[in-house]
Length: 255
Image 1 (tube, rainbow, N blue to C red):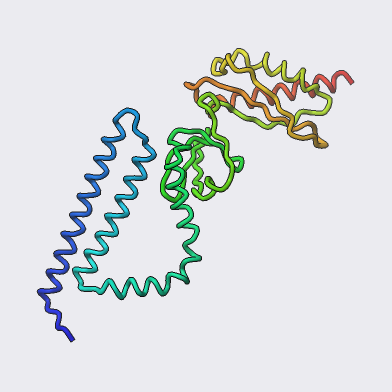
Image 2 (cartoon, helix red, strand yellow; image 1 turned 120 degrees about the vertical axis):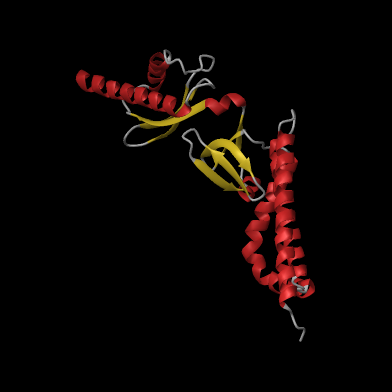
């Protein structure tokens, strides 16, 4: 049995600390370089972020291998062990691998980029970040949703044009006695004086379904790109609510 002296252990700890410091400095340099690259025009920020992630993971792997070597741990036996347990953990990690590969395909296809507005599974938001495993969306209200990349690769999604980023969609139940076409005209008259409304796009009403309470419609309204979406949405909701209430009251008075 090989005798391990205190000095050997001491040097192993010193070399481990040096390795970690070098890797830490390397990661800082990588991050500074990638941030500088983002400042250049016509550079794909999403690709830069993924390159940064990839280099970080590679740095972690190099650090792990170096530290194992410093402590004279046989890597061959570890790789053999990994191969043996690989089958058992394969099923547990298939989702991680699927998300990882999907992230690479999303970037290589160049269909999605930071700042794009998409809608998937009734979740609509602007892409805040694309990583190897997940894509992060943020909606008009500031709610953040993390979507596995495998979902984006296997399920259909809508990618909106720039103008559609500032479209507010509202669901409302219109009483059966209210004429939909007349109600649409009332909406136009009600919101036309709101300065945040985009005057180049006419609001539209789409019928969703009919229930016992009334007709459920989707109201799409476009707003200017310099407005506060959350407060503008609240303002429009309140005006539509008052409009429906006034129509109901008028109907009851006419009875």
